[in-house]
Amino acid sequence: MLVASSTIKHSLAPLRCTISRLPSPRHPLPSPALAHSPPSRHKSTRSRMSNNITLTFLGTTSGGGPTETRNCSSLVLDPLGTGSLWMFDCAEGTVRQFEAQPYRPAHPRLRASQVSKVFITHMHADHTMGTLTFLRTVLGIPKPKLPGVIPNPPNSLPPRVEIFGPRGIRRMLRMLWYMTHTHSEHPYVVHELLFPGEQPSVPAEVRLEEDEQGTPVDEMDVRRESECVGRDIWCDEEGFWRGIVDIAPSSGFQHWGAVVDAGPIEHRDPCIGYVIREVPRSPLTASSPAPRKLVILGDTYDPSPLVPLIHADPPETLILPEVDPFGHEVPARVPVSLLVHEATDAYLPPHVDPNQRTGRNRTKESVDAKTRERGHSTPAMAGAFARAIAAERLVLNHIGARFPAPDVNYTQGAQARFRLECMREIERQAAEGWSQTRRVRPQAAWDYLSVEIPPNRPHQTTEPGTGHRHERERVPEYEDFSYGGDKKRRATSSSGGDGRGYEHGHGSGSSLIRSSSSP
View 1 (spheres, helix red, strand yellow):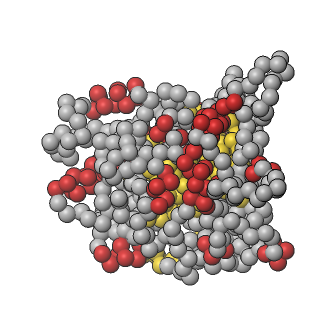
View 2 (cartoon, one colour):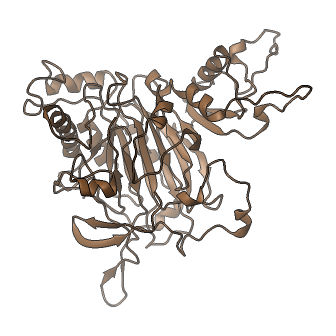
View 3 (spheres, one colour):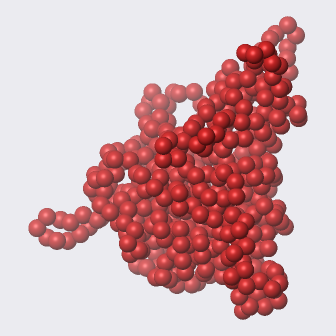
């Protein structure tokens, strides 16, 4: 939503601040030369310009879904504040999630056509099987051929959608494309991220002809007219894929740039976590705001192999002072603004689940052991990792099918109260592992939950000779949005608060979590 300003109150300090949605002197409008660039396929890009990085969950359940209240894994990120979306995982039904969006007064309606990049964390069906349907929807139907006219193939143009993922994603899409007789007006491209010792699932370029040895090729491996030649990206000596996407701040209308790194995390099968780093437009100084950094994980029981990559910030950030958001002795110059971590299963104590609706004869020990055995995490494991990487905010995703999502607008009745208490208990368990201060609270995600990450605050500086510290500017603090709440507050922010006296996040930045009704 484009607004001139909105007022936010911080519960930790009686401070009123304003979120500016309009261009500022620090972030001027593009030059006239850029203004005459070819129009984007995304309508009204300028009208949606924002200083916030926005993440919206389209599907939040595990492989046991979809369920009545949750679709399987997918989320979209607006990393540059321009309305161009990057998707992380694409389960079956993801296209329908775009179409089924409820009315959300605080957010513009998301469209599948806004997605320009797709990042797959691993090849399990609940993370990949919506990809073909998504491409068919976004790339369009070929126009009818005119008699006597041979049109240029779609892949003679730049790809409309880039797909990054582990070994197998390219061959899967080629096979599905061929077997379903799919054609499109616009092209796509697939880049495979290869672990040590791996070879591409199928070469980036395969033509419908015999290979060098004269052996006929498999038709399903052939690169068709809708696919551009992609990259085979091997990991470096440390096992990471650095800079798979690198967008400079001055390459478009956005206020900042972005770099995407990727690295391995432990699951039953090869799995990847992604690190998205903000690239500031201006050179950093000691008092500059820290760039924002997001970590989005796939399924995992141990994401610790990603830690060195998370903290491998570029050399220009060395000028920034170290901060320790929660006093956990995990200092960082660029703290993690947001961590999205799975929480597939959790033990609910009898006072939360007296009738054992989420499973009979379950104990904390048995749930922890089975969750790890299946390659997944509990909320406490997610909280512990958030603590280990100095994450300022934590959202729990990939929540087991046994835990239905609450309806954020209706909290009356036994079933509604039970659903709320389930989510609050999951959040409580994650908070215990994350921070003992009780002033922060993770957020258990539901479908269409949106998280906004405004720019970080500038670091405090000391006036020479006075010892007084001041900040050059203020940005909005965090406001607690959660389940339920009063009708008046929901009318202005899409969701209300539950009135508890602790926050979802804290640290060098600030965050807004807004939601619509669950389905």
